Length: 191
Image (cartoon, rainbow, N blue to C red; front, side):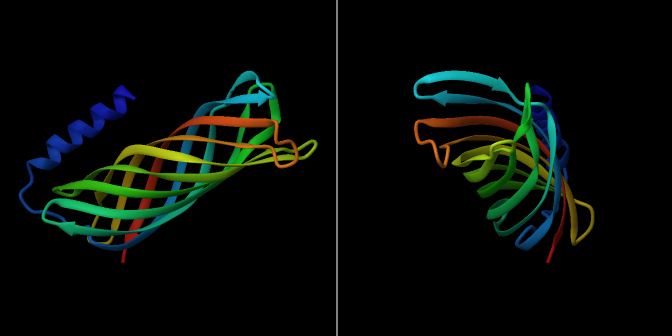
């Protein structure tokens, strides 16, 4: 986390020395890959057991819309990620998807857009052997930097935390609560 924040601050300082503002307004879309870690608290009728998540990748796509007023950029973004985020000792039990809806507030500094995000997340956890399902919901928040490669293309990195949970579909006395951290590499196109 300290490394990520230091990188964001350094990028802000370096990009802030540029004079011209880059236009980030409009529709954009792209693809992403992320490294994820975290944990699950499994609650069985009040008895809670914690499980660590195996570090795993997710792959997905995102699309959004930005509005710009001077150097300030405001926007919304939808993102969908898939993969298998399993937990230590339970390789067949995994989170298989995240759907994130995010509000973005950022600052355009030269070719860079430094931003913060917050929003809601929904997804699904599967115990494949049985199978049991948890349809979970919760919140997300984080920070990121996008950098314009040219007028249309950009690349970026985003650090996102999710705090989600839900009950098992067929067992309402059992639930899972998940806290995840994601470092995501992004590449996108501004229309």
